[in-house]
Length: 462
Image (tube, rainbow, N blue to C red; front, side, top):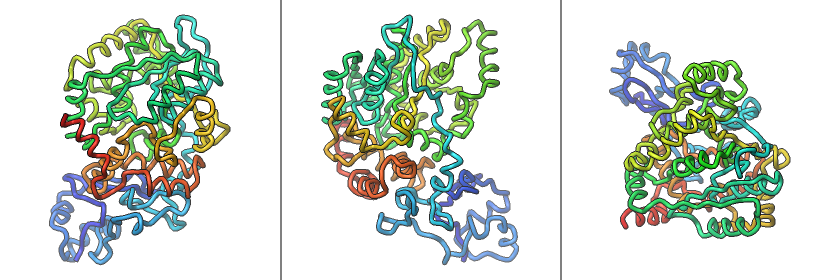
C-alpha cells in the first residue's frame, strides 16, 4: 500500500509541498507530473503494480512512500521535533525538515543569507532635508520596533521626524501609553494620528476576513492613508520599521528571492529602469524611490513592479488589496499622490534602517526594551516577555489563522511569527529559552480557537 508522504498534496497539475524543506531542496515545493503519473497519484492510497512503481520512480521515497512510512503532523509542541539551535519545529511549521545534525533550513543557511538585509535599500544615516520640515517619516505603532526606530532617528540622529499612526480598533493599551510617552519625550517628532470611519473599515475587514480568516491589514492600509501626507510635505525618506527577523522571514516564506535583497546594488537594472523613466519624460529614480512607487501602485491598482521583476508571491498583500478596493474612494487620494510624485520626482524614498548594525551588531530584544523604556517612556505589553508584534490586541488571531490555514494545507504561507521567532533566536536577538517561553505563553499557535478571536469577531458584528 502506497500513499503520498505527509504534507504533499495533489493540486492538479502539481504536487504541492506544505512545509519548509532542507537546504538542498528548500524551495522545490511544486512538482509538475506527467498525465500518466497524475492518473496514479489521483488514486492513492492504494497498492501499486510494478509498472506503476516504475512510472513513479522519480517520486518514490520522498513524495510517494509505503503507508507505514508516512509521517504524522504533530498535534502539539510536546509531540514536535525541534531544531537543535533555534525554536523552529514541525508543529508551528508543519512539514519542517531537519538535517542530519538536527538543524532546520534557516539554521542550515545562516551564513549564506547573512547579507540579505532588506528588500528595500538600507540607510542608517540621513541628510538634513532642504525642502521639507521633516527629514524622515515612519509608521509608528507604539510597538517595540517602531519605538526604537523613532528613538534612533529622533534622539541618536537628531532628525526632524514625522511619526504616522493609524489608530486601529485593536490597538493595545500598552501601545496607546507608549505613544503618549513618546510624545512627551521626543521633542523633534511631529505626530499625526488617523482613524478610518468604522463603516469603511468594517467593509474592508469583513472582506479580508473571508479571504484570510483574519483582519490584519497593517501596514498596507496605513500606507494608503499617509502617502498623500508624505508627498504633500515633501518628506524625502520613509523608513520601514521592520525588525531584521521580519525581513529575513520573507525569504524563507518564498515571498522575496535573493535578487530582491540585492536590487539596490544592481546598477545595471537601475539604469535600465531610469532609461524608461527619462524616455517617458519622468525624472529618473533616486535610491529607494522605485520601491516606493512599486509598493503604492500595488495598493492603488493591484499591480506591483517588484512582483513582475522578482516574482514575488505574496497572497497576504493580494488579499489586503482586494479588501481595500471594497471602498473605492479610499484609494483615490493615493492615486493622485502617486501621479503627482511620479511626475515631479519628489517621491519619498522607501528605505530600511539596519537595526542589527545600529544597536551594536545584534538587535537584542531585552536591551532594546530597556533603552526605549528609559528614553521614550515605552510601556511593555501585559505579557512582558513578548517581543514579537507588541502593539495589537489581536496579534494572536493573525498567528492562529495563519497557523490554521497552513496546518490544514489551505495556504502555502508559513505563519510569519513561526519564522520570525526562530530567525531571531538564530541571529542572537533573544535566547532559545526566552523564545520557548514566548512560544508557549504568548503566541497563537493553537488547533483550538483562541480567546482573542472574540475581540475581532465582536468588532465585525457591531
